[in-house]
Picture 1 (cartoon, rainbow, N blue to C red):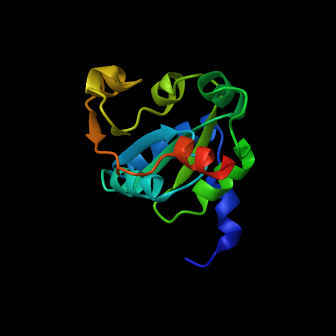
Picture 2: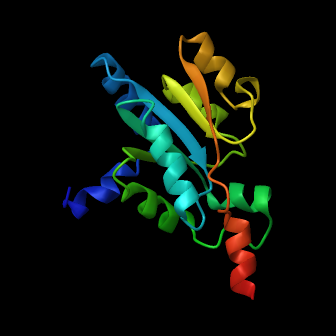
Length: 162
């Protein structure tokens, strides 16, 4: 796809996401969801997003808004503001929609759009994943993917500090 003009259109509101996901699901398409801060994109993020995209025909990414990142990671974060992080995610081929959320977890966003699959990386159990219970109750599933070792935004920031 060389239609760079379409990239900003992938950044949508919660209500737009609810409508879009309902439309995709009505067409029999499976919708996967993942979320995160995605402050400094690195190969670990690309791996994680690629794995998440394999779980459905469409991938929606919930993106922590700046205020949420500050609460979760401290005053020095995010390095890149939410608009920058959203446009970078939206430019990725495997990402079909990016939705900002202000809360500390994507629970409200997940219960609004009700994806077929939630994908998280790391040492979570399906029961620990925000929105997992609700998605499973609606007939969906939670997938835990491994993290690509050796990549960390925090480590990158420390390295840049020198």
